[in-house]
Image (cartoon, rainbow, N blue to C red):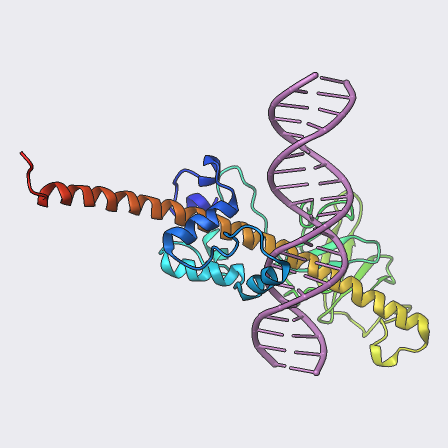
Length: 269
DNA sequence: AGTAAGGGGCGTCAACCTGA
DNA sequence: TCAGGTTGACGCCCCTTACT
């Protein structure tokens, strides 16, 4: 866990009864920053909006905090430090591309060319089914939805993914296998490419295009919300560790002050 | 066992921000 | 200016815990 990976293994302040909001105020107080925006209690919505709009993102705040505290990872850089996973936690390759087939299955192509399958019922990458890759085709750089699927001439199922590549089912049964191939021909017979916006006619195609755009936007926003929540949690953890560090520092300074007082104060005998 | 309360996660919407 | 990213807010669902 991040909390332990950076030698910041203090008692978790949240377990001592702090809410994350309390923590934020606590850090603001200790560091004398201007983060205690809602300390006044009730504020009108307009003011609240202003405050929110002036508030930097979690990524920025945490990166600023990280630059102050050595050893605290910056958001966006934490991937490499997760190299050694804690015992008991199964690691899995982060997929670089995720595609959805016409049957609703998800195909994730991980770095190194591993292909993973996920059924519609499973959630996200959980439940992804690792499959054997028989070649190491480089995955396309961006994630996108598969627009079409087809049955190849040999009866094997194919999924066409962006980047002019084809994921081909090369074995069926209990342990299906898939390959990433460059398509031999431009398109197999019977495959119809999704129409480009410029070639749309009729209200039905326009409606389909609008639906497709909406679903794409929802999917992206879904992922963005997940990422945002992950960053928020990381931000709270960062605040927790900062509180712990500052409390220790504060305690030391108080002790030091008491010691100096004892040394330099005139004896009153 | 049944139930209410509380917490966490998720999807979605909307407002705002930012970079091209 | 606009498309895409970010994030607060809301409602929903599921799980856990305490209580009856």
